Length: 173
Image (cartoon, rainbow, N blue to C red; front, top):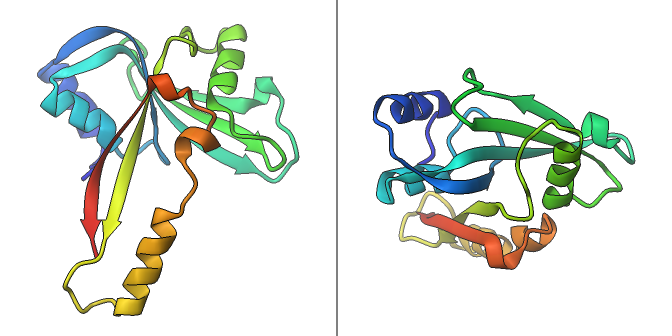
């Protein structure tokens, strides 16, 4: 579904899609695979935003992280294509407030985007029970129930509801 990031960026360089104004922030657990929401936006809508931030978070074994130590920036090989990966480090006692962390990074001139006007994209995977017998029925029910009851990433990361888009796919167990 997601696939490696480097070939996807190469594809964008060789077969460019239209760019729309603004910044898109894609929350994703790592910098080596393409967020599904980014891939779907580019392949189905044939657009990406002028500025694309792929954001991962990391919880450190300290209570708090200073704003200066919070952001690890990676231009993913090309500082001019406006596709950047950020790792945001948080202490174990901190809320993982993505817009606030991005605002601090902007104030420190690490990034040049306005988190108050950015759109936030989430990849949402819906887990469904299927007819297969590889996993016992009770395990499927338990896994689907736990996935269904998981915390909302919009709330957890303090994302603005009016500028957050969830794109997804279904996985059948």
